[in-house]
Amino acid sequence: MKEVAVYEAKTRLSELLLEVERGEQVTITRRGVAVARLVSAAASKRAAGGQRQQVAATFERLRRQREGVALEGTLKDILAEGRD
Image (cartoon, rainbow, N blue to C red; front, side, top):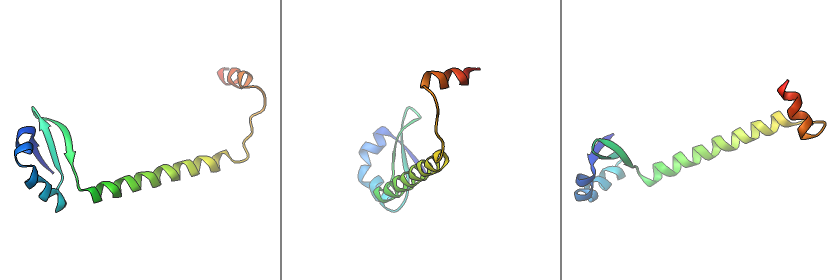
């Protein structure tokens, strides 16, 4: 992964975009601290799609765990019981 300062990124944006299109990731820094990252739109979409699948799978596992579980009593009673 390549790191460039903000000023350099402003002056070389077209060049950096070509590198990103080829698969490179570019981190933009201000005073040595990372403030942004340039990644290809295709890679970003793939990452977002993978995260959506992970979230959906997690909710599905929670639904399966909750099947057949019923709480009896009022919420106040259940909370009080859990504090013991």
